[in-house]
Every structure is written in C-alpha cells, then in structure tokens.
Image (cartoon, rainbow, N blue to C red; front, side, top):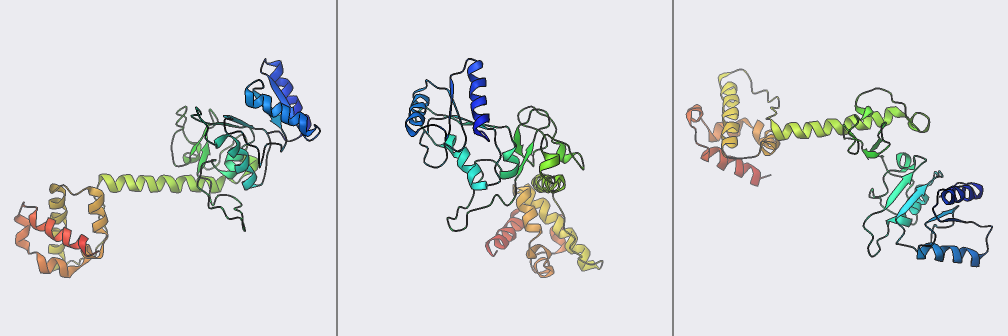
Length: 278
C-alpha cells in the first residue's frame, strides 16, 4: 500500500531489481490492464502487487498472505480495510503477515482487536491502544508485558517517564501510553498477589475483648479454609465480602474455644453458606 502512484511504481521497480516479480496497478491504467495484472498476481506469476487505493473494498483475493503498509491514514475503518486484504481465510493459508512501515498499529491498534462496528456511526478507532513497540526489534506487543516476547528486550514504558522512538515522540503523547502501561501492570501485579498471598482488609474490629477475639477468629478461619483446600484468590474474594466484616456472624457461629480446633469442617460449612447467599 503506497502513498502515491510514483511511490508504488518505484517500490515495484525495487522489488524487480531484487529479482522478485512485481507490478504496479494504478488509476493511470485501463481496467483490462489492471485485471490482467491482478490475474497474474492471483496465479503467482507476480509475487508483489503495489498500488494506491486499488485493492480496498471489493478486492477479492483471500489467498494473499502478506501486506506491506507504506502509507498513512487517519481513518480507522480504512486501516482495518487495508489489513482485511490479508486476514481472510483461504485453503492452505495458515497465517497472514503485516509489515507496518508507518506505525499505523500504534495509532489504530492490532488488526484483530475486537471492534463494535456500526454502519450509521462508524468507529473512529479503539477506545485505547493496548500495545507497545519494542525499541530493539520493532515488534508490537501487549502493553502490560514487561519484556518483548520476540527478542526479550525490556518494555521501556515500564521503566522511564519519557521514551523516544521511531514514531512515538512525534506521533502521540507518551504520557498517556506510559500511564496505560503502568495501570495494566499494576492490575496484573494485584491479580498475582491475590493468587499467592492473603490480603487483609482493615476491618476496624475494635480493641475491646470482643473485637480482638473476632480478629483472632477471622485469622483462624482463614487458616482452616487454606487447610481445607480453598484457593487463596477465593479466600481473598471472601475477605472483601460483607460477611467477613459482620460482627454478628462471628458472634453467632463461633466462640473463643474454636481457636483451639484444628478441624476445617465448621469453617468450611460457614464459608459455603456465605458463598451460597451471595
């Protein structure tokens, strides 16, 4: 996909000079000539077909496997339409390759990000672009990842307040992407913590005898749930429920004598009742 006919013709010439059969189709050619070149491309006699807005809507060649984007567009639907030229399934086709020379993925997101299409009000783009560029190899990957899955380089968005880049410093505001990356990372870290350790909310049980006993019972209760095989993330979810902070629950079902018990039966029973009543 070229920005101008002159560029498209030059690209085709460069491919031919490298020994790759290539051709350019443009509005300067007759319909018959364009049809002949496309048919040669379909048959494999031409391996690269350069163009300017000639293979958009209505172009039917699902077997095409590679797209080279060498032009920019501010239109999100047009970007998706360009990518769609190689994303259609075909017999024997296992994948599509998109080579993005102009950084469109940073502006419009990955070609397979879910979008709610509306013919009356077409989408202007994704609400957020959850991807990051690798400063080492140029790969685009999920912004929450701390390292590039292709080459292993560190994600600079997690490490610095500002980053330079081949298009980031002039095409978008770094601060927004940095904040997004850190937010995604914090969510991931919080989820990992909830899966691996007990996170105690501040219950404010009070410093009187009843409050201290309830606090002790709650910790005993959690230890018994762990011994009973309840996943830590489920225990953390229960600890944030109203039942865990309900003084009446502890005073109704337990006494200080329960603290000496090493059985999980009673805590498991009460836990399941609380879960069932959610």
